Length: 68
Image (spheres, rainbow, N blue to C red):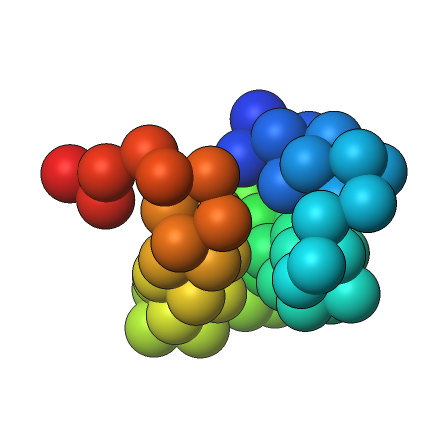
């Protein structure tokens, strides 16, 4: 698991109104990270970055933390 996905699940566990989205995007990001860092690599940069961007945006919208 990644730090970002851990934070997303923690917020979802606090019964956030978008908890289902947070959990789904955290899971997708974890799967992409696992495949990206696997040997041999099973997830390409485009997919990994797309999953990261969707997860980061959801985290930012739900937590109030700035994107940058």
